[in-house]
Length: 148
Image 1 (cartoon, rainbow, N blue to C red):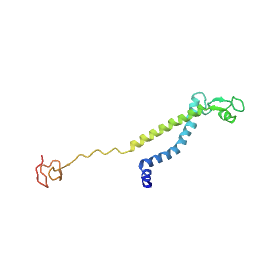
Image 2: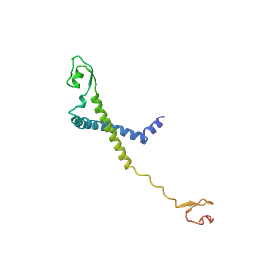
Image 3: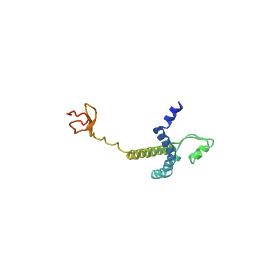
Image 4: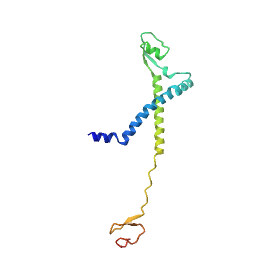
């Protein structure tokens, strides 16, 4: 059973998956920073100075009554909030990660070698003695039988 597990674990596809998970773990914070620090502020500015990370709906006030100046203030007061702005940020992050993975897979597929074209046969077998002979031969050199 240990041998069977080792064969499974060392298969190419399992190793490829492990490398993909590791790279994904490193790649995700980069994309998250791209979304949170570069894209969302620009998008918020275009939509009228909206900070998406601060958008929320107050479901229940906390110990100190609202309105709250920020999401952090609402959480500090113990308020129950529906943080749809954070969800928008996360959704944009997901779309960008998925698009980046799509581009990476497309690039890798382009780098893969095309399968070699099948080589045309230049020989055939003699029907009598099964010796390999040129396609254009009219007589087998091994058994001297005439070929059709």
